[in-house]
Length: 124
Image (cartoon, rainbow, N blue to C red; front, side):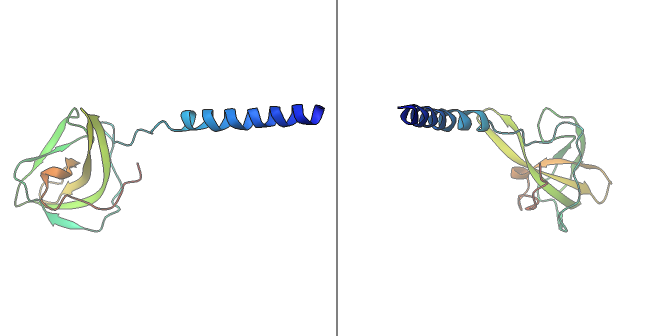
């Protein structure tokens, strides 16, 4: 009789662990660059910005300060991309780049660039 109690206990424990563990580990991590965060140059690409007046921000959110603008004739040195802060019901991708003409570095929303920016993930 003690063997069946042990099996029932074990089965109950396994069932509880199976139900609880996904709820504890399923929380998504923040995957955006806070205002002021820079990014390493992981992308060897250098491209012409294809949208005139693209804001270069201090982080991957429209709530971060504007550090400069990328003009349509500016050459951009792409470093990498990350997913931005949630805005409404979606999160946009952002590319970190250096404006070769001005030397300003910052985050640009990829949907403002015709080539959609870097395709190399920053790792955060």
